[in-house]
Length: 199
Length: 58
Image (cartoon, rainbow over all chains, first blue to last red; front, side, top):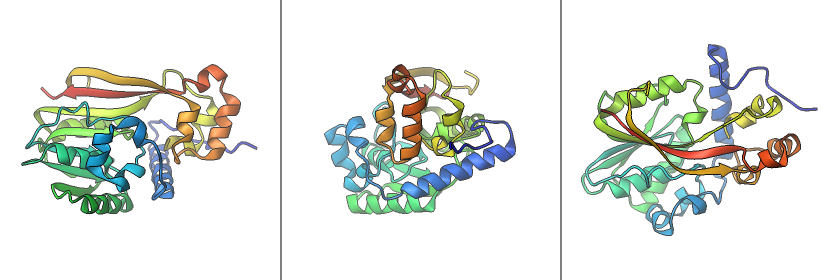
């Protein structure tokens, strides 16, 4: 028998938002440390060489937001929902010297993995910050560029998340967000499956 | 755009198939199997679109 969840994945219902958030967190915890081959399709060999194997094999992204961000030396970048840090570390490389990257994630386990990957790669111009996409723990107008990779779709409060991104960007600041969009709904048996909310 | 951003553009658009989804451990084997069972062959080749959005704060 098909198991489904009674709460729709995108809802104005605050209880549903909590359920979605908790479900997504647990799913990401569950895949921590599992190797994927996703990065080889999204990044060039040169890009992968810049970040090292640990970050590469843990990639869960859906695109390459760093390539479209136009990063230059000296900029401050935030990677929203950084996971194990492939985009954070790539961004840190590209804004050096003089710039730095911040990896933001809600899971301390992911931040620890990102930190270890930075250490392994000898990348020092990077900070790891625990926080929510919908409540970014940074002052107003404090970053030049915001990037994310397959993360905004996970938020049950996307409007709030976009407001926060806008708030922390400096005037003239840029965003480069890789994500997935649905042109038409999937069947209810898929849409209401909590396992689909993290994917 | 309602968020107040300008110069909004999309890049690197590509379709994600069920096979693509199966490469992500976030999708359980049960969910992948359900998608194969419930989606038409055409939809299995176009489950969702991956896009990169860029924009600038004025």
